[in-house]
Image (tube, rainbow, N blue to C red; front, side, top):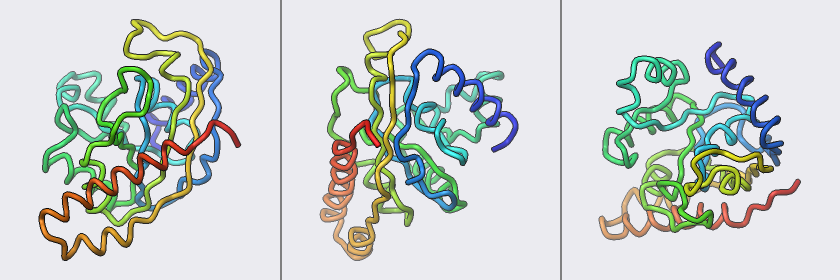
Length: 211
């Protein structure tokens, strides 16, 4: 972790403990080194820091390109090595940036649902997460957040002090689907991407907020 990331990590850690009494379950399941995708449900602006706080390695976040145009915010995002993407996180350039980070051994956070849930429940995954999974050769760790919707959901203007938690699942290996994708037809490829997306979303759904 560089100095900027470490200072942010310390400050947010104190804030999350004081306001939200956050708990983490099995962060040791995230590989300590090498490229890895963390795939999580998304219900609140509180989610990305919550997922990164228990880890002993830096986590790369996606951020809209437009945010990098702001001098102060852009400098902070660059110091945290955030990945600039289009508003919807898609596109060839966004995928290339994600894969480049994974190849160099980074941990990167992706949200299969694409955006925050409107009501706190799990939403169907988009195929884009499946594309990133199949194009990479990295393990994928399912992650689920709890309580962040109640603390600061889309319907709330300001956050409220509610207990929140994050649980990490066992790393998943998509070797079979990745091997099949190398020779699959275009139609089958789309199905493979969706299968991967649905598999990771199902793994997220099975996680519980307990040790």
